[in-house]
Length: 293
Image (cartoon, rainbow, N blue to C red):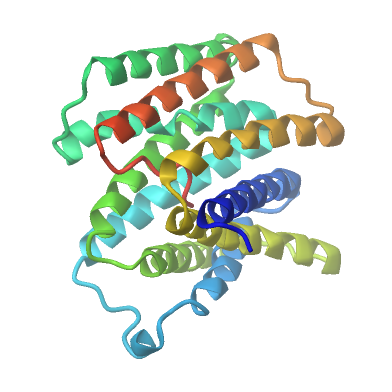
C-alpha cells in the first residue's frame, strides 16, 4: 500500500501528465474552430464532476450563496483558457509552458489588492526575477511584433485571479462545485459559437477532441486529490515536469527545439515561482494553485 505522501506524488504526476496531453491535443486541433474545441473541453470535462457530487447534494448541487464570485471565477477562467488555447496553436509548446509558470508572480501582486496581503522583500525580488525571465522568453516575439507572445501572459493574469477567487470560494464552497460551474460555463459559451462554422469531425478526431475535456477534467480532479493526500510543499514542485514533457512533445512531433533564451527565461521564471512558493510556506499562507482550468 502507498503512503499518503506517495499517493499525493502519484496524483500530482498524473495531473501534470493529463494537462500536458491536453495541451498537446489542443495544439494539434488548430484546424478546428476554437469555439468547437472549447465545447469539447467543457462538455466532456463536465461529465466527471457528476460522479463526485455527494448523494445528499444531488437535488441542490447547484446551490450557492456566492454566485457573483463564481461568475467572476468563470469569466477570468474563460479568458485564461482562450488565451492558452490560442497560444498553444501559434507558439512552440515549450515557450507557452515556460511562460505559464509565471502565474504565481501575478497571483502575488493580485493578493495585495484582493486579499490585502503584505508582500515582503523576498517575494518582491522573486516577482522581479520572474519578470526578467518573461522578458527574456518573449523578447524575440516582441522584437518581431509576434502578438501571440501576449497570450500566455494573458493566461497568467487570468489564472492568477482564478487562484485568488478559488482561495475565497474554497472557504465555503466544495471544490467539485467550483470546477463544475466552470466546465458548465465553458460549454454554454462555446455553444454560441456554432453559427461561426463548426466542422464535423471524423471518428478519430472526435475521440481526440473528447480527450481534451476528459484529460482536462481528470487533471483538475487529480490535482485536488494530490493536495488531499499530501502536503502541498511536497507535491507542487512536480508541476515543472510539464516543461520536460513540452520539450519532448515539441521536438518529436513538431520539430521544435527550445532556444537558449527560452530555457534561460524558463529557469528564471521557475526560480521565481519556487521562491514565492517557499515564502508562502514559511508565512503559512495557502499556496497559489499551479493550474486549475
